[in-house]
Length: 341
Image (cartoon, rainbow, N blue to C red; front, side):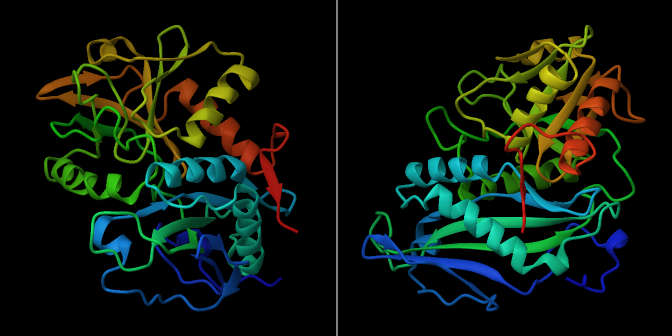
């Protein structure tokens, strides 16, 4: 299929309308068979559950052109499972996981002309999402829902190359114990908007959220998990029931252990020990790893030994290995890459 005439090397990280998207409706207790459509505009009731009580969940994933010309997606089964968990928590019907993967593949195949070529630095971003579509005025779940997927080509998350970030310890709480921090619900991101804008106004790139109960343990940022490297090259990620189980973070921890032979650990990470780490990164779909050079805790600066110039050496190896797997330069574990036919 001939590619669209886009300036692939210079597109930003934003929305570009593509040709097809997937939609399936849930009514009378069942999901319909689903279909592709070129219609990108939605019409819903002014009293729809999504508008009144924020009943909406989503996922984020990418499709890539590999070095040998294949188009693949990365671990869509984990996105399907995570979305199922999100749906259960918000009393929404689960979209069948096998159908989720099938819909991702169909949407990608229908928009192959928008999948950036290998080496451009760009990818096709896929956004599966679900929302309550029927009217709800009392505080209760909607009775009808819509599941959709759209695709949009995006450039690198950090234009001009990856530079270490300066982040601040936030005074805001991201998620309560036993709350919704472990699912990918729109409401979690809505409440983080004021916090991130406050951080930006104060000159910081991101927030570091602490646990709401004791404010002593590191949780995550508004949209990424943390990854730390000790001075003896052990890779550590925070363990908590109120953080999102990042697919990128889980993949990086596997890469660290199985590909790089590093010791790994998932455990509680305390604010007081941050100065002891050699490297820090933020893990997520958009940028894979965003290195952190400095953490500011209410005026107290914690400067990571990896510095503000580039990624630390272990973070760089993790980034290069995982992106190498995604782009087909390095052999992937079985099931990680799903090819679009």
